[in-house]
Image 1 (cartoon, rainbow, N blue to C red):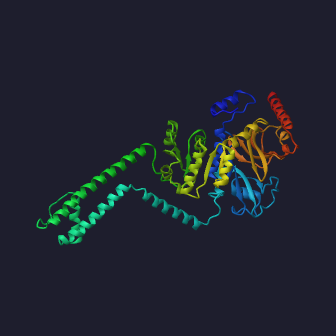
Image 2: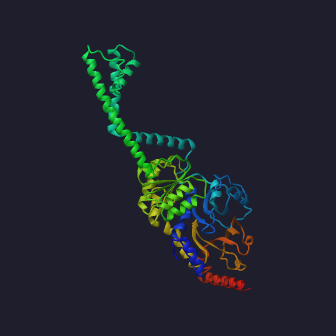
Image 3: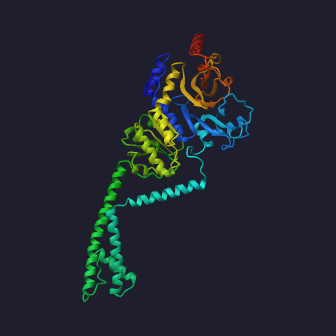
Length: 481
């Protein structure tokens, strides 16, 4: 059953036997949050669901991660996760040394595995000095662009006022036969109409009097325009602040654009980490506003596709950006605007249509683009076959089902061929495991099941159903005892 309300979903599962209820938004939110924290992640999930830690499958290169030549156990300690596959092989020898250049698939809690990963992927290798040079050039160009945005009327009058002031100072230095400072003092008091009277032009020289009168008129006009400009800017700044738009001063923050059904789930997951959070929403509800006040993240009220809104997010110093609005083209527009401001910024996109997501990834080099339907539909298919299905992942041309379930004494006998135990939740504590004999009765276990035996005919859905019925009978028999 598909259900948006997680509370209602939990109550339905408690009251209806053999019923699984899934929220597409909350299921996909785990992947968006995990990829925002670690761009090398390709699938995130909560285990156990609803209240477990955020975990995920990430890619690691043995050489760049300093894992080449190490045993698996040593490498896993450094990674903080469980190595699932080495160069696509899941049945590798634990005593085998990790070869140089090997590609690893690692599963583990995101807060641990992200420490061993690169800051960003998808833009190719760059040396440190090239990154710094590109950032500096981008900031200079951006600053020049901002200067060109200055009000042209105000800029023209400012240039005229400064020119008049300098010419008047030059003129009265010679007319009054005084030094530069005294001449500047006289012009200042004249243009501001202060008129102390300690220095005056000679009435015997009408040209000096006419020049002084012109300075007074120019001064009055300039002061009026300056006062109007400042008042306008202050009024706009106050209005912008009342609307929730203000310049972000944070560094290393994650920008979440869109706080709808998926965005709210991503926000809840990200708040458990030490990354500062900036949320951009056009029309935030009272719940989101109150959450921002209590939990201390920045909430900007504005359209994230607009340049002025993105400028306030301090993207040059951001860790990553997640675009989660309900419109695919709007998410793409946000991504392109963010990339223009920081070419190295990891960007995560929500795209409804899987084909469109693949096209965006291919044409715009936005690899971390995910379709909600593509993430959630395999979960429904898995749940129709066995309890606890959490979807699928694929790597190196292989496809695997992810599932969780409560370990019983009949558990091993119903395991599909090649199943791998990944983690266990015991008494509320999360732990990674390597073998089935580490499990105890009553543990909540997370498994990775190869789907090749099903596709090749060495296993069948009927056999899986028989095993499921056998497990169910065992559970009932245990309960009767």
